[in-house]
Image 1 (cartoon, rainbow over the protein chains, first blue to last red):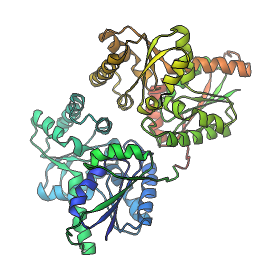
Image 2: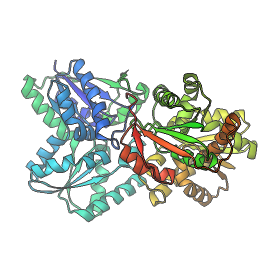
Image 3: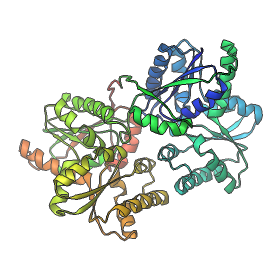
Image 4: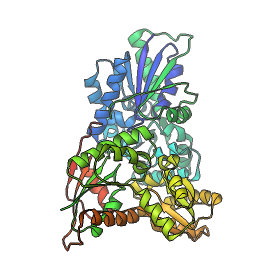
Amino acid sequence: MTTLGVFDSGFGGLTVLRALLPQLPGARFLYVGDTARLPYGAKSQATIARYAVESARFLESKGSEHLVIACNTATALALDDIRAAVSIPVTGVIEPVVAMSSHSFPAADTLILATTATVESHVYREHCLRAGLNPTEKACPLLVPLVEEGWIDHPVTREVLRIYLAEALEMCSPRLVILGCTHYPLIAPLVEETLRSLGCEAAVVDSAEVTAEAVAAQVKKETGLSSAASTAVFECYATDSVEKFRRLGSHFLGQPIPQVHLLNLGG
Amino acid sequence: MTTLGVFDSGFGGLTVLRALLPQLPGARFLYVGDTARLPYGAKSQATIARYAVESARFLESKGSEHLVIACNTATALALDDIRAAVSIPVTGVIEPVVAMSSHSFPAADTLILATTATVESHVYREHCLRAGLNPTEKACPLLVPLVEEGWIDHPVTREVLRIYLAEALEMCSPRLVILGCTHYPLIAPLVEETLRSLGCEAAVVDSAEVTAEAVAAQVKKETGLSSAASTAVFECYATDSVEKFRRLGSHFLGQPIPQVHLLNLGG
């Protein structure tokens, strides 16, 4: 049975795990949510890299044969450090989504919505430029707290999105909008609706879904794993309260989380 | 020169330092913002206590003679652990504000606005009940991110406050509203205005200001420090980007922060 490690600063990466489970039914997943130190979105590169490497090493030590960085911020700021720290293949969320976007929408004007840290790293911009896309980046720092408050379909979230998207549309006229944070799939319908209300017909790309497809294709190639009729299994580790992880996490995963292990990374 | 250590998970405690500086003009202040692991507001007791004790020990090791926990969440969840871990007097933000409140408004119906972790600890409720106040606690998880986004006088912050306060006023009719988070002084005028628009005439108590007065009185008693004509000096330490601390922190402190030292607490 192939084991995949999936890592995020908290709950958002569970949207990637959710997309992965049906793609790799014969696999076993280990998920780490570094909830004691979340959110990464407003922290510095050095701090994020230090934290992410600790989780990556833990997942490798538990037998992971492939690592998924299911967090845009950690991918943007720590992918190279993680790749240097472990000896298994590592997939982040940025390369697959940019590859898919440039394939489906060549040379498109592209708006990337993300956390402050992801935007300030300009990693999306660099990848988009290399892939021939024309990128504009927009930091949306309030969206993660709003999603975590559970205000998924809420007038305040709608108004915050309207403000962020109106500011972004003053800078560009995108054909493509990338949800560059794994929390955002939960408000994807609201993003689409708000774009339409502002007269923008851009397609909305979900980094969680696209990453899961890319990882599944690569793992099948690496391991010869076939689409077995069995069900994928998963185990979750959290660095803060396991009770809270179970409760909040199930919204992101879309199914109950039976058990969560407490993980002490020394921070 | 008396040295005081002031600790917070991030920037909020700078509102307490801001109130302390004119109160103790002859003193030297060391401030630690544990920005690499902020916010504490949604974390568990065990994690918060572990983090807070590390900062408290650091401040004692640097020569602090009195420690101020300038963070409601750390006070609520870690005050006993901190007092057990260091050998200098420790003042939190909760005891002074409840003492002052019960003195000025005996037996008042009291609404406490705070983070989720502070509310779930029910430490404010216990202190209020012991002091003869009649408390109602209300978690306001979005207020910290809104203040950190800089949306201080903003329609969205106004609407979020209206929602939180309307929910709270369904549970109680307060004569007193305690701002139980050191981020909230920045939106104190908005809280007052929103209460009035909802027909509530309660007084608003700022835990930063009240704590500073209590600490100043106690330190003067401990050390015989007189109100010297000199100016208080301060040094800041942050566990994440010192550049960001300098930039954001100056809004909370109300004056420029000339230099910030990077502190690695091993997390």
